[in-house]
Length: 219
Image (cartoon, rainbow, N blue to C red; front, side, top):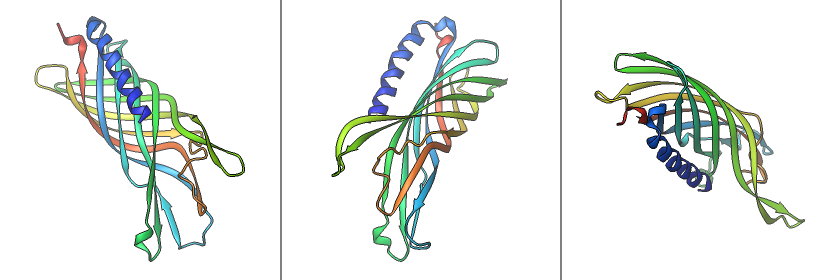
């Protein structure tokens, strides 16, 4: 919830700035979709008893764009997504359990646009940080301690298609993204149990749809 509030606040502030500086060439996008997280699991049970995997879940975010050349834009993104794990017990459907955790992503990238009549393709590599808020466990009784933030670097690559809305430069868009993380974000988290331990690096593959606003076209 903390990441959702932070991203929403950032969106409101930057959109206010963009709309008052329209002549510079600013834009903003809002998107959401489905993603599949890649995790590593250390299972202490014999093979065939318990399978742990990450089901398809959601992600959503906002992108702020600044034009720096004819086809190039700087892209600042804020995103949150739910990383879930699902237990599948052989022969016992009643024990199947899904637990999830929400991560925040903040990234900076470069977007290259290939403009056509009424639509455009784009390519966007970026890099940034993945964040996960967790409660530290302390003492022999593993009591709950202070809130901590796990940080990990990520690299992202996405491709998309923009369809311009009527005669304006506002547009609907959809795309695909792959994100790769380098640091385990599941620090003393509830994703682990006595039967298995999960390593989640913030790596996922996702598809999304959204709507983009080109503030530079406003009078």
